[in-house]
Image 1 (cartoon, rainbow, N blue to C red):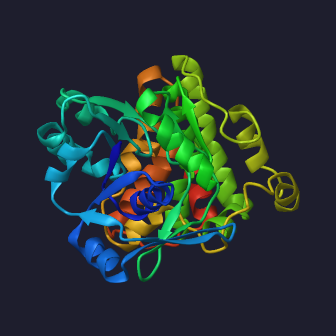
Image 2 (image 1 turned 180 degrees about the vertical axis):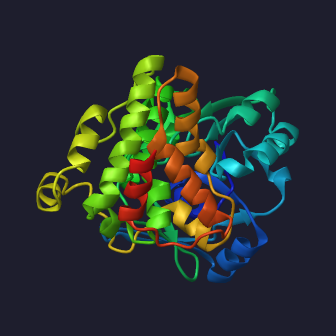
Length: 334
């Protein structure tokens, strides 16, 4: 089996190196800048928050999409904002019978691929962890999380390779519930970006957790109205997460020790996008909640405020950090 990682940035290089380490034939497909870095290093170094450190030699990194024609499985690790263009590339180059797995945050990013790619089978998965790119082709997994892939025969070998390496991976026959369950957690991405704080520090502050809890409660209410189930991806049921987030700091640190078991300097990918002045995935995260809430007729003031603030930061109309007090004050005016 040949696997192509399409959109091999931080997450793509990390996943590709994990699979290559387990002797799966992997090709990375991405940008010239990263190819030059990987080629100069002679491979990829992968580390994680638990102290693991491995170097994978001679990773094959390509920049031309023709390599997609070789793939039995394509793992798409591009941003949601790049999926429209990716759909036409995949439609042109994927061979008949290939399996394309879209691994995006948020809801709905895979739609262009489903609409345009007809020769290959298209499905969705979820990458729940954060990967930070360091110097000299180093990719560091900074947070915990189980990789979720659809239950498909072509993915058995990939799942086994991940687990064998020590990267948790599960195959699921009900990916939509996992995608919505992951969205509940990803609503923090924008809050982290506008706080301009490392994740651990931001989650340690009750004010920012109150904002996240409010966003989550709106999603839970909209999903209940629409009869959309959410998978349990943490130690507690989804409906209990806002209650835990609202706890006083001292009690939260005791109850949510696992939630805070992350690198002190880890940040959300949306924070990285803001720093690099790239388009963000906000429309597929908090924006998706606002759209769903409007569809079912429930209010979504918290997600609307976070959406507006993030876009203001992204458009350079305001600058982070935005304090939790300011965000909560905006919410009280809604």
